[in-house]
Image (tube, rainbow, N blue to C red; front, side):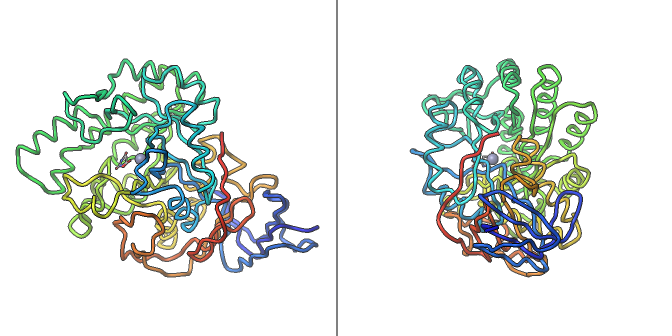
Length: 464
Ligand code: DOR
Ligand code: ZN
């Protein structure tokens, strides 16, 4: 047999087990897994002695800013997918708040064409749910292959290109204000018919407006005041309402980038009653808390905000107990110039795609989670929840040979100037990490090794 790639002598990891073995790749798929060496030559041989061999890691939450009219001065897919590959990811899900936004099939098809030649890793694309504005497009978007639908609860959009308005004030011109619950409820029903997940950005616009006003009047500009302007209850009330809609409509719900501890309890209760509700948190909510603001500054500004140590602790419990099934980056780059403003004026978001896996691997080294849990939250669960398992998210024979090789022994320091994203905005500059993704293999082909990209983009669009 002529194998395309053999990954030898590694410790193979899934969500349950760690076992020694060799992986044989043929025609982009895993052709065999064996404890003993199989006969035949190989075009590429990787010796993974002393390293862990994981199913390729997946980031379900990426804003690459790419698109015909996109903010590509902040980031583009060439850079974000390169960062993904170097950071140990084999598949990313691109968010739909691009420009053009992904609210109909025409824009989805344009985006597939636009992203494919720049893709170092495989990618899926989210569809944007806009209430009545595109309620009749949801079925066709689903059929055309969006991975799921995202709804930015509490956000206004501009009336021309449906771009998100981040600092909406009532009365703004050419702006469609945040949707009311009735319209959202009808939209949930429509999405339920497609069988796809509706994933929500859960922040209550009205509470944020009111609290922001109160805080502005107080003159307090501290991080504490910032948290007061976007309080836990802003997340809690939306998650609560969304779960009620799930009970009534049968829609499958995913809570994106959970930051508030109350969300964990709500999701847990819904799951215990058998409702199809999943949750995700991000590396910044697990690795930072409000106490870090004095040191890090507005670089850690993100919506929803990084909250208190208590919230962080409950989120970790959510990860460890499986209530939260995945960790994402919410890669949302801005330029250094844009982030120079103060906490209140600078845009929310950071470049986090390249550090996601490293930060979580570091938690494995520190003993906070096991390597099996890492596989659960960064590979197996995302693939299962979004319907791409076992093709992605597993190391089963016959499935895509997407593999992330991890060395738990290497020590490194995150340096912002070494990130491959166009934007170097990270709150983790100078952060010491034990363990690293050292090789990324997409459908059998090595795309990154030891912090360097290998070869040309060869990523593919994937659909559930
Ligand atoms: O902080 C954020 N930035 N939160 C979001 O939900 C959107 C994102 C962005 O696109 O900049
Ligand atoms: Zn996001």
